[in-house]
Amino acid sequence: MSGARALLAEVFGAAAEAEVRAPGRVNLLGGHVDYNGGLVLPLAVPRFVTAVGARRADRTRRLVSEGFGESVTLGAETPEWARLFEALVQGMLQAGVPVPGFEVALTSDVPVGAGLSSSAAAGVAVATLVLRLAGASASALEVARWVQAAEHRGLGVRSGLMDPLVSAGGRAGHVMALDCLDETYTLLPLRPELAEVVIIPTATARALAASGYNERRSACERGLAAVQERHPEVRALAEVQPAWLDAVLDPVDAVRCQHVVAEVARARAGAAALAAGDVVEVGRLMSASHASLRDLYQVTTPELDALAELSAAAPESFGGRVTGAGFGGATVHLVRPGQAEAFLARVEGALEGRKGWVARPTDGALALG
Image (cartoon, rainbow, N blue to C red; front, side, top):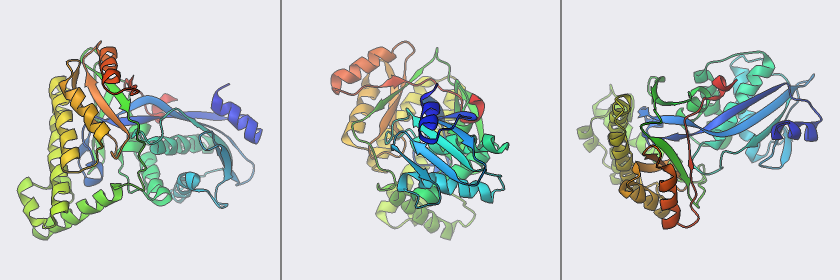
């Protein structure tokens, strides 16, 4: 019996009718451009939130989380950690999903605060499980939109679409090239004989809602509004030409927007390089992305910077960068095939206690069955 099934039986005395796993994610390129309409290159990683559940005869909806060590009834003084799920259920009901009463148990091995999108994975896991309990279906994009809206309402985080979409719709052995402006994507192979992906969590977990994430997003919105006064046809920062940023008069807003415009170009170049199998170029672009996130967007930490610098210089690595929103969390590295263990040993030797792991792209929740 899985840990989630045992938890469901222990807390609610229920036998699971359905089980879902939703993966976390890392992003190779496209830092902070998802909410600016740019291209991003995420992949689903084999760390999962597992949700199991059973239907109830009434409309009561109860949930227990191993990580938080308590059970809740949604809608009845829902504690902060469960507000994501309360908002998610309400959004699904508004979308016409016949959400039944349920009892759900959650377990997870996605590190919280590591920049691997543990909250999005939890939302995708519960949304997918509720669909199965309801006998309904939805696309990965629909699930992602519900989870994104729930993060906005329930957590106060103005997150983009990338995290829940790759958790729902990722594919094993592939990177998702997602255009966040028109919400379309293609899947690009990441062949293990060319490169491996390594993730290294730092000692600093980041609190996204309490961090500067929303401040950065507001700076981008102000910058876009300034550009649109001269170029009203522009829909998002992803469409802005570098020369147009002279319309952004606030110096802080201007440098935030400079990062986004340059990062959009890097992500597009990275997608082309990945499609061509040019992992050397992808790694170079990842290191350049980190430098921009450090110097212009200012979301890195000294430990993240040290890991990125080590990755740029290490013979085993093509390059690396902070993944997720920054302010702590983790780095992601593109490493030569067969060299992951040597690279991890190098990292541990340079930064005592920093242990990472190889992350081979995995399927999203809707494909895992």
